[in-house]
Structure formats: structure tokens, C-alpha cells
Length: 89
Ligand SMILES: [Zn+2]
Image 1 (cartoon, helix red, strand yellow):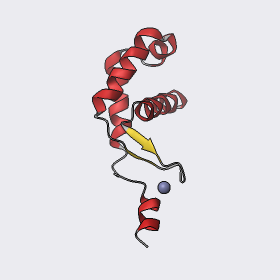
Image 2: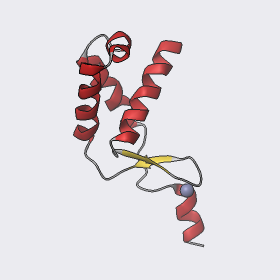
Image 3: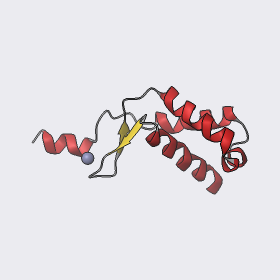
């Protein structure tokens, strides 16, 4: 369980770093960014090649990209819902 959480955390970091997901700077809420999910896979594959921690955590690239895809699918909002609410008031 803890290992799965670690995998999800890393997948989330990759998604944020690549701009596929964004985090609201005010509310720490994650929502969709401007990049296609392929940007996250590209970044992750580069890290997988260089970083032993990635190779240990994700036994193979397919498993890594599947994890990224699953995490990415959790975030459907186009914007931070709290910011939208504040703006529309
Ligand atoms: Zn916000």
C-alpha cells in the first residue's frame, strides 16, 4: 500500500512537472494543465533511463506510464473549482 502511494506521488510529480497537471497556488488543488499526457510520459521515460529509484519503484516503463495515466485520470477539472467560485461571485 505504501509503495503504491509512493508510486502515485511520483506520478503526480511527473504530471505537475510536465505541465499536464497544474496546482492552484492559492488552494493546493490540482487541475488539468495545457500539456498532452504524452509530455508526462516523455519526462517519465527520461527519468526512468537515468534514475535507479524509478527503475526500482516501477518494475518497467509500461507499469510507470500506466500509473501516470491512472493518476492523471483522477483530475478532470479545467480550473481550480474554488478560484472559479470566487471569480464568479
Ligand atoms: Zn484556487
